[in-house]
Length: 234
Image (cartoon, rainbow, N blue to C red):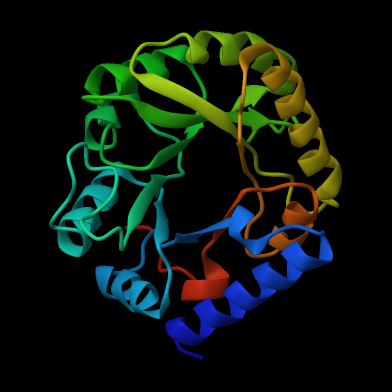
């Protein structure tokens, strides 16, 4: 199947999952994870209807953004015509923040107040961000522990130049993800009671996005189901 065919199939599955959960499909943004795939793949998916694309590596994001979205609106948050919105979904080193801040619609994985401050300093406006929460407490993954998330959320919410829009997580690959998705939603609801609206829950990937939608995801990050098996990281 082509990328366009894959996109249409994923779009149909997301719409069906939303209807099964009693939700409007317009509530869920599909972030097509294009990391390590060429800019031509991004263009093919965009031509089929994809609007949001996620990258894990700052330099790769900058290169693809230049090739696929050469005419940007002020602040770089959306291209002229709104064809492509870029998301940064990987772990970001502070020294690479200048390549991302002000260039993407959303940074999905802020895990320290220092990173938030660096993004805010370089955004040239207000950079929307999500707090990455390691709900399962996995040592091999980044993100703040759930117990420490409220303190960090308060600090990020008060950091100049950024806006805390919600939370993001990745569950363990070999477990039922729903308990972790439910836990993230519950944490978000508690924090929203203190900090105000936190509308975004970024959770769910190619293998579990339907469960994530049932649990309240607003953004699902889907790579393999759209682009196929990714190329080896260079």
